[in-house]
Length: 247
Ligand SMILES: [Mn+2]
Image (tube, rainbow, N blue to C red; front, side):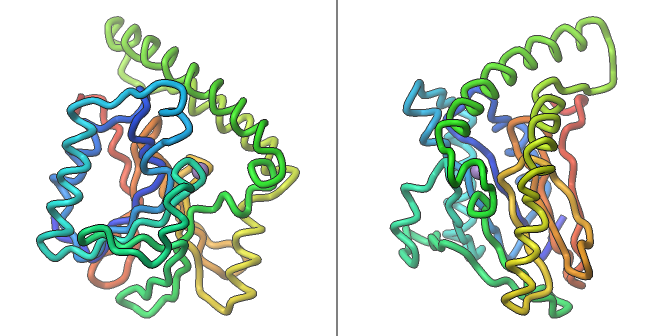
């Protein structure tokens, strides 16, 4: 299917949890004019501990490079797990532009700020050690979850239940209860006179309105396998690519 734009975040290449195979499927299904990679695409933090780089993950990178070469406009907005790339703000790597943030105007004229979002996460901003600690725990949960989902498949349970997603939602809901990630993102967008935001970081995909502004989160490819597409009329759609029928 051809769409105007694709927005993806939190792919976490370099980790065991990254569902590169599903992402390849997704990229095969959707062709676009713009491809926005909104942070935590390559997980340099996790790779500092141990690199889990599969052939499928290479394919993801090759597919993205090929699309950029063939005229798809690819913008890479680094997140906190690939923050090393932030110092290359404005640099073209081949056909991929690195940008700290990006202003995207949809086909129907909505001005959207594209930013990873860790800047609005008071925990990762001020207490990096908590985030790193949480990250190690999260990796472990993803591994346990892989076993659980295998077990459930084996037992022919068809509903996809995700331990890591559950735990992350629990932890993050407590965190956002205090620091209010979404509202702080929206606050900044309002200050800049824009119509909305497309971000990532909290691994929780959604398209919703918050006090009259559009809040869009791409989700992730570690757990939920979600992305956002913009159709040619400017309509945004959340795609969930976690069909267990597509292994
Ligand atoms: Mn992040």
